[in-house]
Length: 384
Image (tube, rainbow, N blue to C red):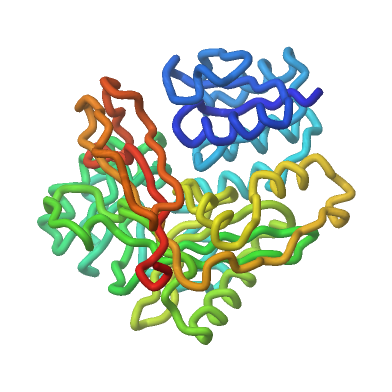
């Protein structure tokens, strides 16, 4: 019987927990708060901060855990690698790489060192450090946050000074990164590797909330309104993206499992925004199942369980189920407000939908502006 430890019990973790339960596994869940959609699904729960590596290690050791995992959580990745390495458990990414990908400063340093995706940037923990920055527009971000917390686009030095203190409060280590801003469309690249070979490289359009609605200047930038698969790009662009991502993955030394990247195609070329050693947490994997008939959860966990015999993992080819694009679109709500179900979705173009809260639950803050409360997967009009 497999005992799996899931770090977090929120919306995304509930998906993984339900899958693991369907395989008959015993599921343990940890979180710093006793709340979340997955709380009622786990067999065992403990209130432990998932960034507290030693406490998580102690729990895993005491309960004879076989696998440690988390869905869509950047902050969980270093803990997963640390605990797995200490206990000799299967893991796709070592702790050093997990930490590198979890920290925007370290990742930018890595890309610069290998002359990949050039972006002007600097990090600072003090407002005095902003004096040397003169490239605008720019993006200001906490170096170690996720969910777009404290990520703001600034047009000039005055705005940079204005929003710096808020962005700094969102950083656990107390550092902010300022990056050159590039115009262009955003994309998500999800790769699945076996034995150092990329088996899937799936590219999707990333539809931004600020491109759909007018939002305040001080609101976080880069919040996803949805995704479109496959991406609306040319074959040449797809080839260039794949070439760049393949090089980055090789330099990182990642050989197995999932790794995803957020990129922007700018007039200056392809620019990598972020990378993370996990399945993208935006419910794109559900659309993959409809579009390509692949179950990324099954592949991920079967791969982990094969351990040293990873090359024996059977990875099925992509099989087109729909000839055109599918869209994953999100419903949003204000943090702190009470959730209520929208009107029922009645459309033959909707393949799947779900909500992350029960009616009357208070919407929890993630980015602090507009939080995801549900999703739907839609066939494009061309498929009617």
